[in-house]
Amino acid sequence: MNEALPDVPEVRVVGLPQLTSGFDLVERLDLSMHLKVHGPLEPLGGEQLAQLAEAVNLRGRGGAGFPFHKKLRSVAEAAIRRGVRPVVVVNGSEDEPACRKDTVLINRAPHLILDGALLCAEALGARTLVVGVTRASTQRSMEDALAERGLSNGRRSAIRARVQRNPVRMVTGAAASLIRSIDGGPAIPPGRKTSASQSGVGGAPTLLSNAETFAQLAIAARIGPERYGHTGLYDEPGTVMLTLSGAVARPMVIEVPTGVPLRYVLQLAGAPPVPQGVLTGGYHGKWIDAATVNEAIVSRNSLDAVGGSLGAGAILPIGQETCALGESLRVAQWLAEESAGQCGPCYLGLPAAARGLEDILNGGGPAALEALKQVARNVKRRGACSHPDGSAMFLESTVKAFTDDLAAHVLGSGCGRPVQGVLPLFEGGRAPTGVPGGGAAEETGPSRQRIHVDWTLCRGHGLCADILPEVFQLGADGFPTVAQAPVPRYAEAKALRAVRRCPALALRIEEDTRAESSARGNLPVLSQGRGRRALGR
Image (cartoon, rainbow, N blue to C red; front, side, top):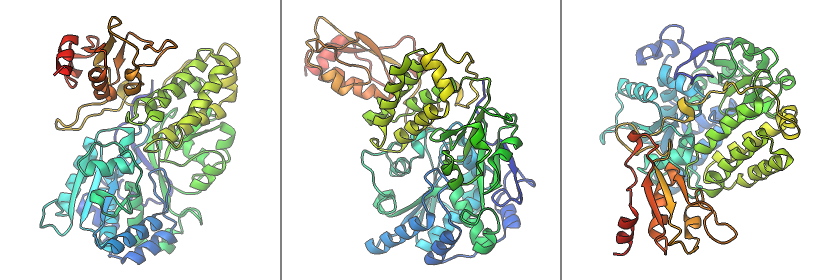
């Protein structure tokens, strides 16, 4: 089994380092060492900064790849039009088990990220800077970096700067989730989609981008667009940070110029000479096969052209000796567990898709394959964030990439290969959730409650299926199809609501004695009698 990646794995560079300059000298560049390695940084005006970002074709490095100069101009225009100061947010929430590039930058070169963020803040006239993180190591490094610069969240500070620590969850990295948490809410997407550039933190126009993006901007501002363009491709200049894991001898984060053959990067990490497939872009990414690997180069356009994705910069090969569909099933199950539990197509659709892939592996035949394809189509573009879209893309890519493996499972008795667990997941298959310091409780992990139906009271009203569809479905007779079931942690509040609203008082919640004792106590445990008295008041 592949162990979880450390926060800071081995770091390598192809060619001359830019983002990783100084990594050969010290483990972490404090402010003094940062200035010795990179030198001072002169401020730029807003339009100058936008022209610089446009000249080097800087795109967001968090996955979406949105042009940075368009985002910068949009925030500036909104701030001027509304007469309010904008906010700058660095998104350092790197919550995929296979991604570590931003975590490495925050831990080892935090001041390069702050250079870019403060450059933007000064150009825009922003007086608030927030850095979103999810790990203890990144929180500590960034808080130290702010202190080294004399920055704080004090009211008298010229710019109020602070670190926002959120739980490690896939959905935490969404821009809307981070903004919501900064405003004091939960770190999950809101029910409606808004543009952060127009209305973000506190309703102000907000420049929010990925940690690597700000670091790249700082490099470009120091060396200028001409020199920046001497590295990498003409239309995608500069370097990119990649995380290599999966079936490799040496998991690593590597800085490479765009245009380097993907095959060469895989060789550096000790990947199989002829991999069965390579997952590009992370767990919201796409698979490419061994033949395609030989055609691909490290660039957004090249990977898109061959059916892959640069995405969040994660590259994961798997060897010929493992079951590709079985490996993908482990990821699909994790993606389903990472739902925020608030959009039906996500919290119902993604588990259904994972079960569909499992049905295929268990000999479900062509019907199971068609069911999986249908579920994947149904979840896209129907959620409050990009999690269902990215998960569906991963599943559709899996079906398309491993046709021989798929045929062996759908039409035969399986591929005969074991599942070796080479794709990294968090320990136990889940992300370590929960806000440090006794904040919000975990929403994942083993269920702590079971909900029961009292058949002597149930009259088939069906409200339970409306309120708690992840547990209850109605049969042809109009009654629930289960008598008892575990309650997912994210649905515990809804389960309690179902108990309280049942017209026949036929539901009750009991503590699941099989759950770990340490996980008890978040949801009030109502006996049937106590629940009736509470409802009867």
